[in-house]
Image 1 (tube, each protein chain N blue to C red):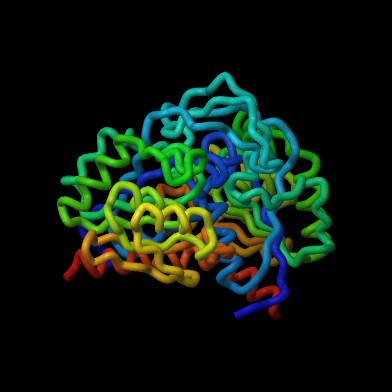
Image 2: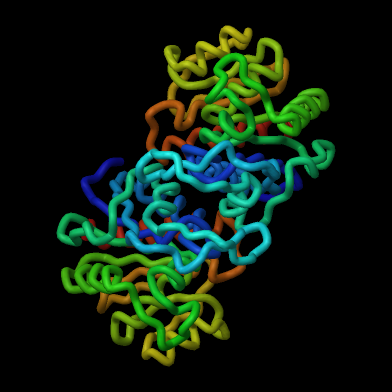
Length: 221
Length: 221
């Protein structure tokens, strides 16, 4: 199966605790390729909020750049987010990881009063205004709750701080199980909880594959 | 499908140019989980040979630890390689990435005269002597060409320096296509070329899945 559909995949570093979640990012790319579509990876050219030792969970006295570290997942084939022209793509996907809440936005530190990176906000608004499908996994939908009024999204469980914050911001949070995809028909937004639930890697693959499949269905309608 | 089979997966960092290849590592874990088996990730607690900026390809003035960086792929659930008791596992798999040739061995710098990390050598010898299946993707089989006499393995194309070095060391190098698995029946070794060929991520998934499937078949014989 082959198609000319092109996805932009937006990363936030390389590693769940301070960047993009590696399994979600990889399995999103894998799902896109298996669907016969193409992808280009992007990340903002900014410093990470911090660097976390993933063995101990402790902060390290280091500085790393989001674009440079995301390039590890992209095998070097990556572009700065500011170069992303939504007109050149059919769909946009944000995998998860704390990077979405620490680098693409400040949710991890500011709760419901968080700010969103201006390039990320631009891309979301352009994608929605051009009626192109927008996918978001794991914690990434919290950003949509800030940028889009009353978006219908997944996050973790009902008691998770992100779900509570999203509801305060006016989002329609939907509690789901592994691999479920919530579709906001108004905004053309596709979300799935992935590692916001206590999941295994095959459940992450299922979530990424289901989001990509639903987006491909929409693109082929 | 569920099984009590347990794989040890050995990483060499986090990123193709100075560590474990992220897609090969992730898709190996994914293949094991989809086969209903379990895995535990290990990496040596040593410093990386160097740190490469994956955006530019240039060396960075930084120091990183193989175990700490591998923990990014493992989401923190990782153990030092010296704690790996082969008796506790049914099979061992080495994904690829330059980390296999820079951190687990010195092949990238010393060619056919390279040395192998002592813990890596111990694990390979114990796996083979206990007749357990050993999988190796991408560049990792070069290590087997040094540790095991006359091993039958994949690498890249026939003209690749790794294939030439392996043959000089006495290995039986087999040229293969994407996703092919070469099985050394003597050593119970399963190899596939993955990114040693110019491959797409879905071909990496196929290679990892085929290696895991063949190992599972062997374990269930």
